[in-house]
Length: 357
Image (cartoon, rainbow, N blue to C red):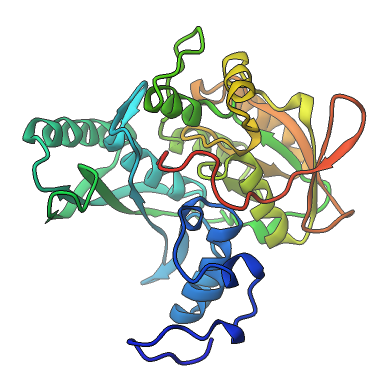
């Protein structure tokens, strides 16, 4: 990327990114949506600016070695609206989201930091509710909040409360979870029903009623991952399909590994309430965010045993095989439809439901 003085507009003619980023000289909501715009922003602006081999892996968390010990390190920011929703609040999301990012590296999360960005005028009782929920979620996840920070912005320059959490955890010996290890023949397993979190947020945000109560699936996945690793440490890749949903997670893994992915659309577990809500709202469940689910790429010889272990855990009771990695169409995700045809499941451009985490 060419050098640019701080007070001049960037010269985007030298960038090698696709058109969507070139055509947007200003940040749009889609840049934070976990889709193609997010990927372009990271790959063509942030990654060249920061450099480094670890960052280039672009995993949910970074696997680093410090003093001979392998650690996973992750950070995330939370701007969900509304702050409280069925099944949780921004405090639960902040803990579980970071713990889950660490778990996707196989790490056992140990410590968290938390940063509160508060808007002037927010009720202290609301701050207390979020802090208490965050602390309770940390205890449930078996992690300790050990450091933090607080900032206040002027009224009208925030949205009540934003949170940032960072976490570290130990990666057990013999565990090497990363998309680059995925190979044709790997079995794709999802841990349960998809789309629940995003629909729960939308239902309260827009005051919609779908005939049944829909609560977020927000939960810490560390225990589920450890039960899978107890079967075999040779899992190839894990990802929690948050922003961009299952479609984004599968595309990220396909592109990083160079393998193709085929899923059976009829095998993907979509609850009737989510399917109905998506039909009403014109959404595709594959692109709706989750906060308590994971997708795993498992060597075929271990798939049955790993699936049994997942189903024996409360957070994996509805685990299902949905597809496989293939040598055909490298880097692409394809779905077999219920009508017997196929369709490409592309990386979403932005985000169907913004501000959901």
